[in-house]
Structures are given as C-alpha cells and as structure tokens.
Length: 324
Image 1 (spheres, rainbow, N blue to C red):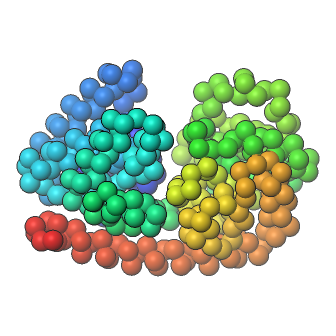
Image 2 (image 1 turned 120 degrees about the vertical axis):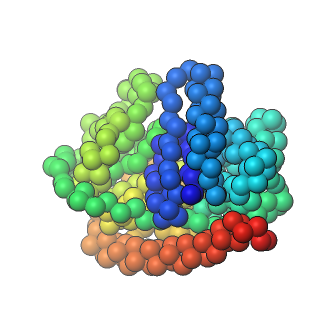
Image 3 (image 1 turned 30 degrees about the horizontal axis):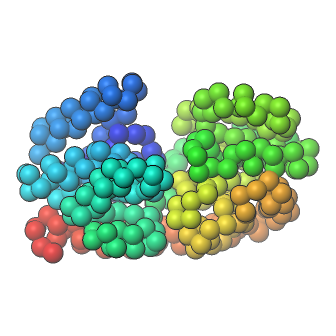
C-alpha cells in the first residue's frame, strides 16, 4: 500500500494523495508545540510500523516529519517521496542554520522530491536531490456549487491564511480605493490581528474568520473574483487553483511562476494597494471574457496534470522495484 502522511490540513495533500491512490493520514494535533511534536512523532512511527507501506509520501513542512520519513525509509528499505512546499524548502525564510541543514539532509536522502514548479526543481537539484515537478491538481468540488447572497454589486474573495508572505494589509488598504458597491471578503482565522489595523478597516471589507469546507466553497462560488497573493517569488497558491476550480477570474501576484501557470483569465498585481484596487476594477469590467479564458485554462491544466501523473507513476514504479 501507499501511505501519505502530513502533520497539517492542506488541500494539496488531499488532492494529490487521491490521484496517486495513497492512503492519507492527517496528523493535525492541536497542542503546545512540544506536546504536538511528541504526539505526531509517536503516531507517525506507529502508523509506519503497522501499515508496512510499499511507498511513503510525507509532506514538508513539517521538516521534522520529512527528516524522520527519509531516515525510516533508509532503515527499512522503503522508498520515500517528499512533497516539498516552499515552507519545507526554506523554513524560517532561511534564517535558521539547523533548519537549513535538516532540509538539505532530507533532500539528499529522499528517493524523490515533489515540487510545484521548475524554480523549486532547480533548487532541489543544486542540493543533490532528485525532483519531479507536480503542480496542484485542479480540485473537484462535487455538489458544491450552491451560492449565497453576498453584499455589494460585486464581490472579491481574498483567500488568506494571514501568513507572513501574504500582503493582507495592502489588500485591506486597497478596499478603501474600490467603488463602494465592491465588497472584499477576506478568509481565514486572523487570530485577533485585526485589532492592530481596526482603525483603517473600510466598511466594504468583511473578515469571514474560519469557514467550514462547505461555507468556504459557497463563498467561492458566490464571488465574482478570487484573489490569492504572495510575496514569495517561487510559490504557487492553493487559492488560485480553487479559483480555477470554481471558474472565477483570478487576481494573483505579479511573479514569473504565477504568470506562467495562471496564464489565462488572470490579472497580475504588484503587492500594493493602488495596483490591487486598479486590477479589481479592471477585472470587474471584463468578467465575462476573463471567465471564458479561465474555463479554457482549466481544461488545459487538467490535461497537463494527467500527463504529469503518468510520468510520475512510471518513476514510482521504478522506485518500488529498486531501479534508478
């Protein structure tokens, strides 16, 4: 059997594990970090020993999970595939030497490292690892197209987790520059951060807080535009894939990686309020044409992903049989 282990909840784990027919285990423990790591480590080793998998997929981050997985794989001669996100390759933005060393250890000892784009593939190869580019598959939201009534004539959903790479303050400032009938919905648990910028909160900004899966999908399907932003140059965004899935025009950050992958039905912005507001107005003026382009992009990305999947399965077959 194939086993997929993660220590957090993240859509890519669910979509890719389903596609590669791996048994997904989300060990998402909520506790003090010491207790959390202890419980996750125990559960991980228990799962590995009981399952006796033929191949193990492990998400990084956690970089500790990835390091444990490759060590276990070498000990028991089981192929280990690391699904490496940006945070798993550049933990603490490269500021911690021990974390960087742990990442390099993982890269060298993994049988294969999955990454979302070619820039990350180059990083893996420079560090003497074996990489395979596998972007997120377009999610399939079955029976989830119910809509709800949103405020304003037009609505934009900013998919946000309040991570340090998300310019959410600039997005909130941009709302003040929008027409008053344009409402901006910001998703995610702010954990009280809004207290710091309550004074600048425009009336047309709605912080949704944490949403259940069904509530979140209803919001996406009800919006006119989906926005996903990052300050990282080599980061693809789950929110953008979700925007494709619900066939809503996208606004993403103006990076080469994002422009290459989200090449139709999408507007690109500098991560500052004036440009964000300008592109929202531009998108509103071209909703129908952008949506048509996005449907074309959706078909293309689904076909391309299936081609990548076939290539990955061939690699996995060789890993399992011990071939290089």
